[in-house]
Length: 583
Image 1 (cartoon, helix red, strand yellow):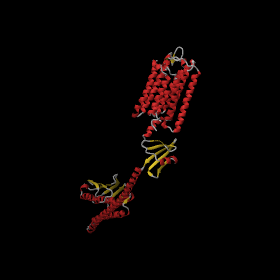
Image 2 (cartoon, one colour):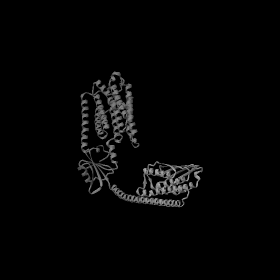
Image 3 (cartoon, helix red, strand yellow):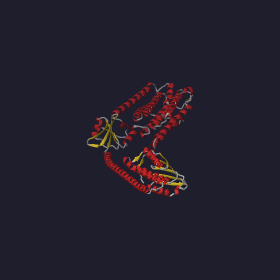
Image 4 (tube, one colour):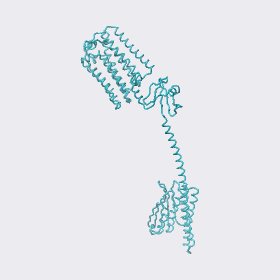
């Protein structure tokens, strides 16, 4: 089957119906022209026209071209895949046939009035063909004009109707043609009025717009194809201009015949070159599709296939013809998947080789299994690492609490062994021992809290802060605490905070009339921030006292980020405890 053959796009039954339709249209046209030619004797042609058609009967020539136009109109209607454009191409063919029919009747009538009005009627198809061609170009170029499309259509229709009306009513105003004694059978005995030149400009503008739209919408590779069609149209435009200016060679030709040939040749070139969508261009696109795609007729025989398609398997063709549309595979080759769906007059069969994809799926499945196994291993390693980290933190906490309890209890034992006889000093030393016992109690409770719950929530933190303040007030330190926490605090963090607060409290214990206030808050980086402010009646700089240096040493042991600054009777502490770290 040749891709270049126009008839190759149709099935055998469609070809038969096509030929029958074209033959019927051509025969009807020929019979009508012959009947009109025999009805009356022909009018007398001009000398120029007779010289230009010597040996050729003008009516027979028009009849032959009318048959050609009929064939072309049917073929163009069937070849164009866009119903909008195909209807307009058919309308152009009908208008050209009607024009040729009017010419044949005009040449074969002796009634000069009828001949004159038939001459005027030439301008009805001449007014309608240019806007129809422009409409085809706009549709082929997919120009989205919205409301402007309706306005342009209305303007073209109104202009065509206006020029047709001016031509048909020329006897009343003589704006189209001017002549003394109207005798349209004799060429050259008339002149052109302003309405004719306006009509000539109107047709020229629409034909130029036709090619301008196709040029603008075409890809760079297709713009060169506009040139042949434009060259044919330009030749036709020059002929019309020469005919209007009464050049002898143009006046000797059959104007309606030449005009129809130019229009038909231009539109045929646009169809053939793919500027207007047709089965020719679609066939070329179909052949270049990168798919194993075949079109089967109803009996399962191959109608068309792409260049990338392999041989059509008989089993696949039989399955596609007999089974319901859908996807199927063949038992002897499960790696090939076939997709079948019905078309008008046959079935489309798409074959896809799935062997590579299935091999890739198997590889991906193995890789997925390996990754899943690695994921479970990593989760197990993470759980073990978290468990070890928890045990290590708990071990550090127990070691920290054990060291703090040992040191505090040793200091308490030393204080109890060396109690002075003076009641005030004795009482003061016992209060210090009480602070140490409270510190040991708080530190020891963290071990129990770590065993029950490794984190202290907000309510427990507020309760502990208030208890710490009460412990300090019990030994004569005026204390207030504010806890503004939203996240739980780890036991290791709480242990470090105890060390910081009690380190500040032991400094306050040595001051005169101390007032201690501290605030617990949190930062965006996950650290817990302690702000402590000590105010006393001491006249010395609290930042340079030995007990302040001891405070720094205790904070260094706690491994916190801190800042200690002092002034006369005042000491400020800012400490940030990192999450999960112990002293």
